[in-house]
Amino acid sequence: MTGRTSLVPFKNAGALALHPGSLGNLDAYITAVNQVPLLTQEEEVSLARAFRDREDLDAARQLVLSHLRLVVAVARNYLGYGLPHADLIQEGNIGLMKAVKRFDPERGVRLVSFALHWIKAEIHEFILRNWRLVKVATTKAQRKLFFNLRSMKQAVGTMSQDEVARIARELNVKPEEVAEMETRMSGADLSLEGRTDDGEEEFAPIAYLADPDTEPTQVLQRRQHEQLQTDGVRRALTRLDDRSRRIIEARWLDEDADGNVGTATLHDLADEFGVSAERIRQIEVKALQKLRSALEA
Image (cartoon, rainbow, N blue to C red; front, side, top):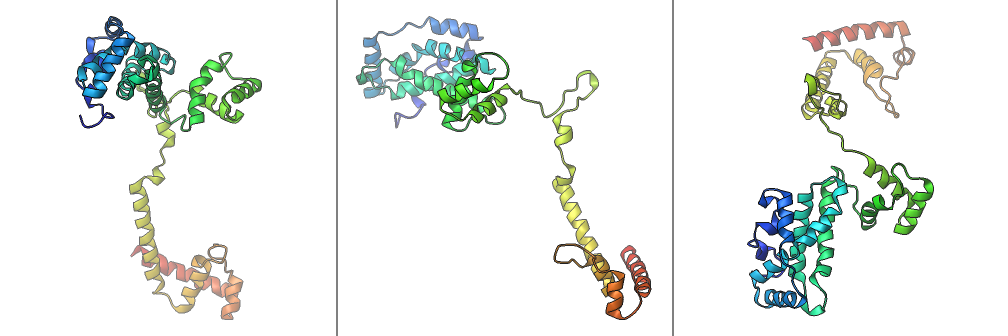
C-alpha cells in the first residue's frame, strides 16, 4: 500500500464486507453481520493503531466487520426512497471503509461515532445519483432540503403555504425552493418507451417527443436539397434577359431591410422600366415559364 487514502487495503477484507448478496440473500447477510462480535474500546484502539502504524490489513478487516451492523441499521432509514436495501448497504459499507482509513484512535472518539458521518454521506450520494434520472439536488441547501422534507411534512399530500413557510424557515431556504422540491419528489419517473402489454403499444413520451425535422440525416438532406434548388435557380436566371431577370429577382427573390422577400409591386417595376404594369406582368409570366423549364430540364 502506498497511501492511506486508497481502498486497496480492504479489497481482501472478504465478501461479507463488500457485497450484501454474497451469502445468497439479504436476510442471510444481515444475520451474519449481527453475529460478528462487537469490539471493546481497548480492542478498537489497539486494532486502529495496528492499522495506522503497521498497515495491518487484518486489523482493518476486524474494524470493518465489527461495524457492518451499523451500516445495515443506517441504510434501513433510507428505504423510503425506493432503492434496494442491499444497494444502500453496499454504498454504506464503502463509507465505513473510508472512515476506518481516516480514523485516529488518539482522539478518544469511538469509531461508531466517527463512521456515522461517512456512512450517511456515501448513502446520500448514492440516492442522489440514482433516485431520479434528473438530478433533484445539486447544492448543499437543496440536499439538506431533499433529505429532510419528507420527515418534516405533517401530512401526506400537498403542503399548505403555512407549512411551506415553516419548513423554509427551519431549513433556512426559500419557500419557493421548498415548493419546487416537494413537486419534484412527489412526481414519478415516466418510461420513455411504452409497454407492449396485450400486443398493443401504449402512447408513451417517445411518440411525441421525437422531432423528425431535427433528425441529423433529415437536416442534411434538407440542406442539400435547398442547395441544389438555389444553384438551379441561379443557373436558370442566367438564361433570362436583363429585364426579365430584374423583374423576377425584384418580385420573388430580393429581400428588404426587414427580411421580407419580393416586395416590389408591378407598378414599382412599371415606373422603373417606363412601361405599363400589365406589360410587367406579361414579362413576369414568360420569365417564370422559362425558369420552370430550366429547372425541370
